[in-house]
Length: 115
Length: 112
Figure 1 (spheres, rainbow over the protein chains, first blue to last red):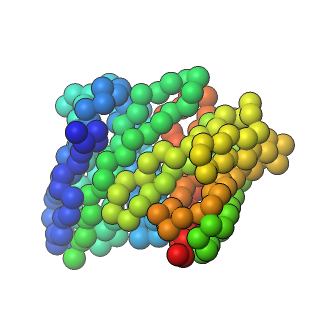
Figure 2 (figure 1 turned 30 degrees about the vertical axis):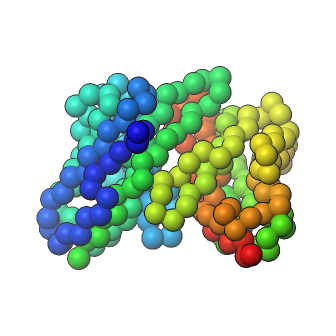
Figure 3 (figure 1 turned 180 degrees about the vertical axis):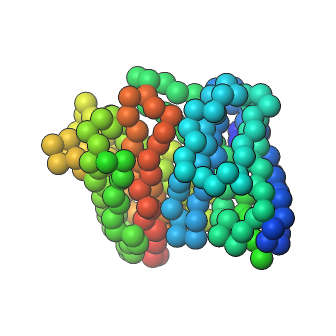
């Protein structure tokens, strides 16, 4: 059973297109995230939702729009794709435990290539 | 203040050797310091984590050493194995925050 699953795993698309990545978690967690990992492997948080409510919104172009239909799903829609959007996008989830820290569970990533 | 600085960027170790990866932070509000391990083609996975009330935490061959006064923490991998070859990320968060700040990663290669 995959805990955090995201689709598609690979996506090659042309500049200017609009695309979506879907994510689902079956861990019962309240919080979900989108992280971006660039070609240098740097992991940067983009968005976080807690119980369908946006709680973290880093400096991300507004071409990127997350949507959380319920707490088990967090989708990422990207408009007008640019070459610089090429990266691996990781969905993740966690159940925040204040006393023990925030263990984040990552999906396997969606490899987006914009040509 | 939100940064976590990680070094080295890459590390090559012989099988059986000790791998050491270091991280430093500025934000004194950070109170949770996990290490994540990422294999090629996979997402990062929690390896081991520490809170600042202890100076060391060991799990098998993996040990975190934490120096609160220096604002530094490090990952030691004893008896390194080729299967440990991966990218390792340190991270930090504060006050039960959902926001985890990651270091830039260290690519570890363990030669057989």
